[in-house]
Length: 362
Image 1 (cartoon, rainbow, N blue to C red):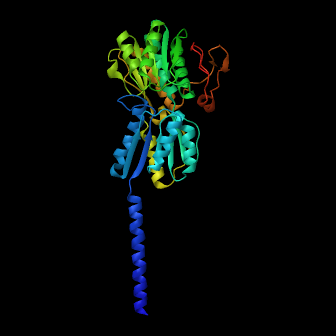
Image 2: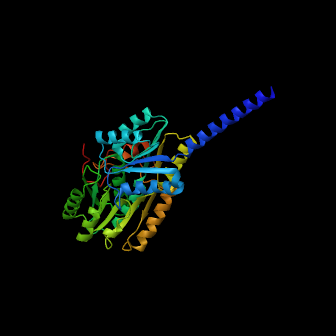
Image 3: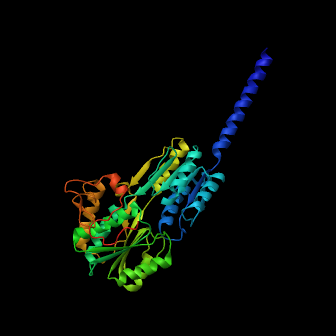
């Protein structure tokens, strides 16, 4: 009888050891992270900012994380096919880096409930599908203030990617900041319908300068073309996402940067802990995600004092960029004094504020 008990005990111990060894092997596998980007990573721009954020995750986890990157993939059927392939290749955590990846990514997430997805610039969510974007308008408001300090023509030009709410609200913030200093300023916009078109961006910058713009804003372009043209033509320039100062050492006004590493770190930690929960994350200055940097020394000290005070007020919540009274470009009041535009209205913004003279393409 004792012999039988000893054999059973040994068998149970071996079984538990096997299960334990299997569990260790299962969880010792590196987490495979797939990053899909709409443009080349290069050394500047939107894709670089996303890649830098994922790189922080890689540096933290080392060999416990494996990252695969697919870049320069335009929205559409090809992107959907590649997303499916990324899942088939074993990626368990996917970062989808463009607005146009939203619907295809969401369908894929619903078919793969054990995987986690984080999607840039969209608004749809599911249990395993988060969406994230930045309050770029907070930073662009400050940039507009500085532009008003330096413009002589009172005309600012914007070269923008797609007419989506995220970029429209960024332009509106730029206009509101500029016109808070000088209400006679006009903002002209050229839409490219592309995240990455160096030649078209270059041509558009030249057109805006020919029309009298003496300060440019490259909004959503993953190329330094606009910045380079500004340097060549002797006009000031801003850009979005990562510093392009080396392309315009004399005429660079500043950069509206995004640091996505806090978001990616917390999302990966949640996935590894088994409690990832899809949600919408809208991050700004208070979250240290939106930062304006590389300010030009040409901006007056008086204006920088105003800018710093405004930045502190926005970050603390004392000031809101979209506080009334607000008027659209036709001069019609959208909200009265004492009210603030709702989050939903900003996230779905499809209209320009007063002072922006260009129409929004349909």
